[in-house]
Image (cartoon, rainbow, N blue to C red):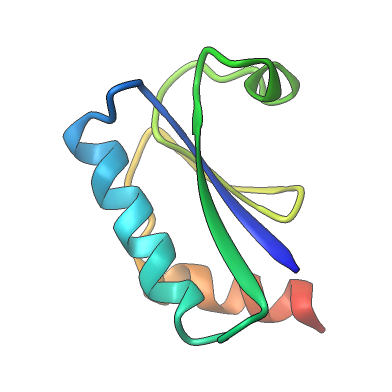
Amino acid sequence: MLQIKVFGTMPPCANCKRAEQQAQKAAEQFPGQVEVIHLDALGPEAEAYGIISTPLVVVGDEVAGRGKVIPAAQLVPIIQKHLG
């Protein structure tokens, strides 16, 4: 299953919440194939991405966006690429 990781503050800031909502909206177009998880930008998983600003959206292992909300419409082609 392809993961979309949304790294943000804990508790989530407004932009982090919106980023997660957009990721969820994109994931809904691929039932059973994509899951969205929210991770702490200060957590151990975040170190690999050198997070400077939030939200950070990662599809699979590809950084889709840093420091801004990525619309679902922009995430869909990235998801399609990863699902083949």
